Length: 370
Ligand code: ADP
Ligand code: MN
Ligand code: MN
Ligand code: MN
Image 1: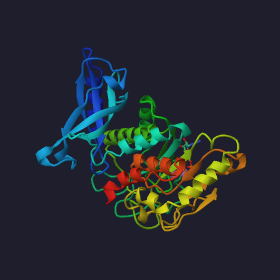
Image 2 (image 1 turned 90 degrees about the vertical axis):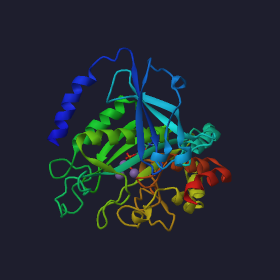
Image 3 (image 1 turned 30 degrees about the horizontal axis):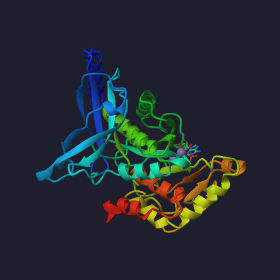
Image 4 (image 1 turned 180 degrees about the vertical axis):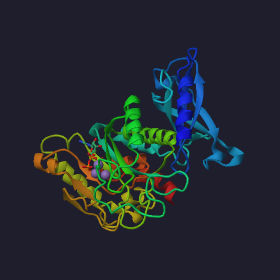
């Protein structure tokens, strides 16, 4: 740890050097396993619009995204954000992956999500995602800060905990929060979670495709910050078996109609539609989610669909305040922490805004799972 800190101190000196008018753009993309990858390049002037960013490519055979004999995968810039690590005019560029035959790469779910969001743009669908995650010791992979070979005292004092022994790695969380604000991410809050070394940040409300974009960016920033602190992040939905909470990505949703007085009617209609597509949604709600959706630890069983006001054991929860006011939003508690937010917000828009499911789009989503 002290070794890492020292190196970071030395690095500061170089980060302050002028760049002779050049800008560094770090291009990021999602690989075949839902992990982030990135590489940097020099641009000759400050970027003010995404259209000024050149397309780029990478060796897809090194990331499981293309065969070795046809390995180029193209990176199409879709959004850019101020870089909190390099600062100045330097930027982080979010990209979509495309094959050289002009089709979206197998793991590019943003493309289909974008089509759905455009088709339903008139309904002004907003999302707020609650990203839970767990910190691990990078050397042995055990939960960060826990006694080696043992366990901390049972869950109870840790959720929103304050004080030594109740929270772990607040420094990582603080650094990440500030980095998100600097980059213009709509981060709406943070809290320590029920299991020690488990945390949550919330992003939103964000409209349409911006939700997936901003969540992936916030994850990228978290990976980079924790890299500096020498801590590992896992988005696995059940990092530790037993009487320890799993990690989810609760998905809060509203349309313009739901946000108007009387919107409870639209909320109820959405829940009715969701009840008819439980299985299809669950398929896109994260790998290993069955380990988490057990009906215990503030979850509903994966087998059945349920909804309720203020009920944290239901698939869908209507917040108490929303029920009282008669309009607002609802929360889908089923998605796991390791979701691709493009898949989840995409199918949500399709189910909630579509009168009949857009079967073609869903078939596209299913590519990866069939
Ligand atoms: P919880 O009580 O479930 O822990 P949080 O406060 O962690 O809730 O998260 C609530 C999320 O709901 C936030 O991300 C917030 O941005 C989002 N949200 C609030 N209002 C709306 C809305 N009208 N539509 C969609 N999301 C919303
Ligand atoms: Mn929350
Ligand atoms: Mn939570
Ligand atoms: Mn929640």
